[in-house]
Length: 258
Image 1 (cartoon, one colour):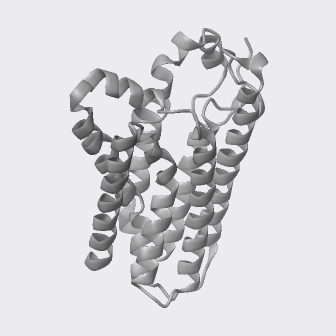
Image 2 (cartoon, rainbow, N blue to C red):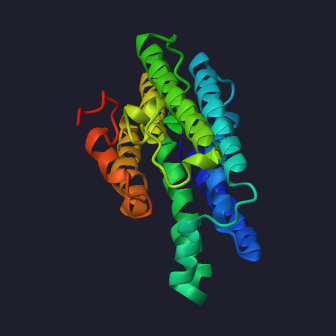
Image 3 (cartoon, rainbow, N blue to C red):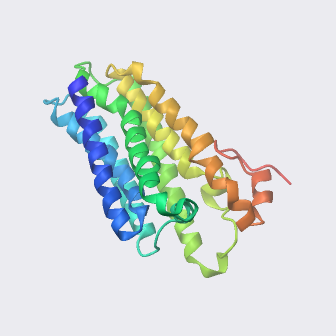
């Protein structure tokens, strides 16, 4: 297990450092975002390759991670293409000035590599264990939860993309479709994906890695997800205050009546 986890960690940090170098030369570190899903695919693929032959559960994990990661990376690549550096990183660049090159290395690229590696531990550990136990109810439950998460991410992203593509919606708040029931269907979807993968990993002997989905949940709710995104959005979209009053911040539910 140590060999697999150390290999994936070193590989992730190395790839992130290479991406940082490319982003620094291009003066656009936004390329780290599309890599997020791909990074999980790389980790799963390397862990699987080091622990062949795969069991049925191993094939299931590889498939779930691959489908989720590929969709996310392709979507983010398409969304960011031709738009320049994301405003979050542009604000960091302006704030740190000449120090941005090493601040971005540590707080954007290396930090994301470490988080990615830690969050993916349920998949890594389950692949190392190679449990021969047949797929069962826990695997099915995990796959269903993963499927719910993928649905919320993919449908939510598609709805938002269509909304933003209409010039008439400039400056307005998206409150249709899944966004009527939760202000962040994509984050809720990510939450479900990783708890679903954890359950499949749990069935394969990775129950001790529960901190991984817990950390992801905290990040989505309190750090880099909901809290960060909503810290400035009301200033940019005045309608958002009313939207917050009637719409759940995370877990879907019918909107409150005004």
